Image 1: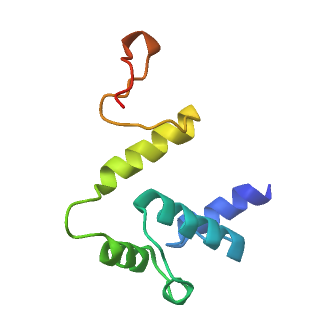
Image 2: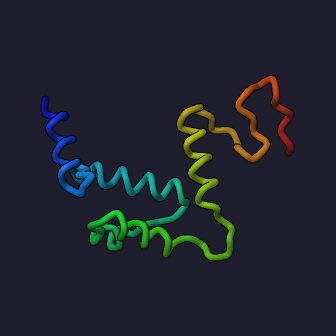
Length: 104
């Protein structure tokens, strides 16, 4: 019963209500992993909105094009669903029958 009411609160209010500090830390660690950046505690402790998090992450992204955020997110999603720790590139297939030997 409690989770049902919890969801209703977040639907009525414009919040994702992470609940506690551990949820906050896990969220920030996931953002760091996905975008390959480091968020300092002093930067993160003042964050109140998703927009502020977005602006902080955007400010940390390299401007030289060396990181493609969309690619990083796709790789993270594929890793989390496949359990693979092997290198993933644009030629990595979903099906072994289409796989080619890895280039060294």
